[in-house]
Image 1 (cartoon, rainbow, N blue to C red):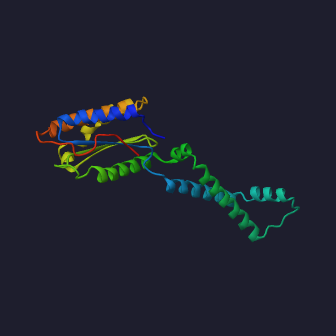
Image 2: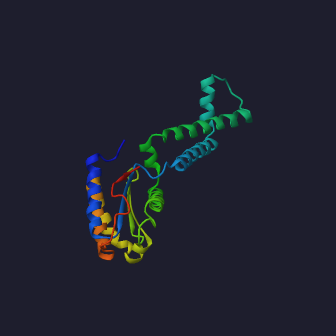
Image 3: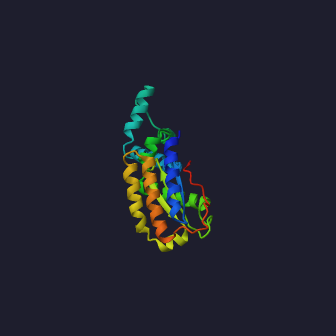
Length: 224
């Protein structure tokens, strides 16, 4: 399901075109549902829960063994090592599978992903997309990527090396703040447009538009 409707796409595209009228920089906007599947995190949670349950079984063995005995109606059960280990293995496997299946529900999966991991994966995804779509693809290497990852609630701004050498990372903070102010209110298109305008203003200061400048990267919003 698209994150943004056609009107939103048109608003962001128009903002990019307007911003690039005053700079030789090229602004690329990308919005994605998520930056990663986090399958490794889900497996880690499932394995951790399974290990925790097995540890509790070792500490309090009478509870699960008594439950199994009551299910089968066994009188004065005598547990052999194979019975004990078999029961523990079955409980561990069932716990792992249930935990893994539960995390197929996206709200739970993303709730369980630590914030620092979300940030790292969103940053890595933004850099990967920048390398593919903007890095060294413009005359003078003046590309900037604005990236939104919706599930993680993360935004990133990645700039080509010549821009990064002239613009301190802190300068992008104002653009990020204006963008997130709108996005937090549910106005995603307005937020992206605000970020584009701010980035364009920064670029126009350091990389003003030349007379022979041409549009080298698409203005349209890319939705993944």
